[in-house]
Length: 140
Image (cartoon, rainbow, N blue to C red; front, top):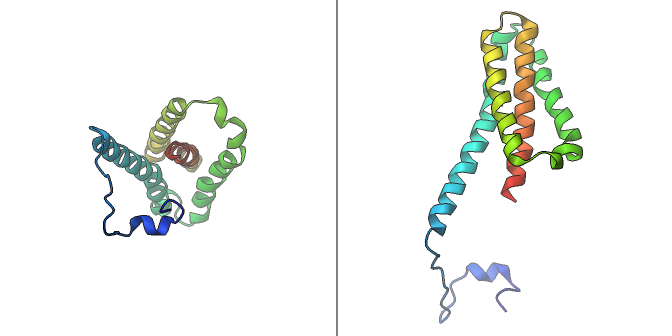
């Protein structure tokens, strides 16, 4: 009866004893997964925020250009991803996300030309889009 009414499952009912004892290691594994996914999400979205926060440093008068460079490549990945995500493993995509993030940030930091910096921003955009879809799929 209580399985038919999920709202009542959290209500304490007198005389009903709930078994909440966990198997050894489950609590530690649950915490490790929670921490891992939190960190993956933080790192994945942190780069996006850092790039947009530093947009004026990249192009003094054209923050919109940096915004476009950050949005368009990611949008293309999100549109085409369903056609090729199943062809790559999560491990391969995670390696790609790491490589794109590191390469993109290094290019943005050390490039002396606007085109180079925008290319680094585009790589960070690809990283963010692939990471978002990959880590969201891993949670299900």
